Image (cartoon, rainbow, N blue to C red; front, side):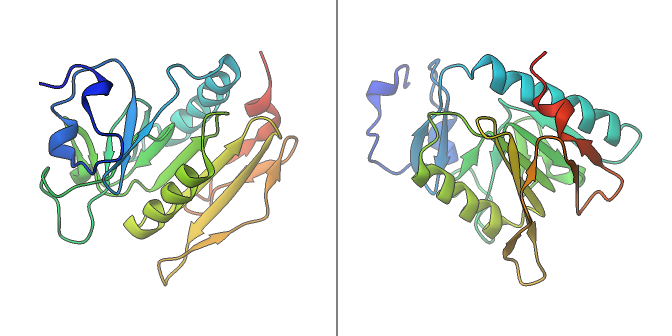
Length: 197
């Protein structure tokens, strides 16, 4: 049994089956088999932004056939047909995700690409980690991906096109209305999201 992070080779490659055997407090994600440590606790501002977004999205999907989840919530992203625990090498915990295909949900979280993924950046996020996440979200078929920059109070939105590639939209800044491409009725006033209540 693995009880401490120190028992792992941080340069080694792991699968979801390995991940399930780890019993320690530290939060981490697997991207293509490699461990990425997550900050122990997000800042108050980070949490406030997630709370504000979760409220708006939760109200929007009420009565629809979609479900929203906030971290910690495991999203397992298999490659091609590899869906067994021994073959899955990417397990992420997006800040918020929306899943409309309930066949992807199980007691462990989500197996497959959510429809919408939202990541709120923290000072601890590395450029390498963000590039890796962008790539795996794109490859797995996430339909819409938002990256929220609390420091600059703007959101970058990426929409999956017909060829399976993310297309970046013009960034939305504090004071503007963010409209989702896949949920056309979802319009979010970013003044309310970045408000520091």
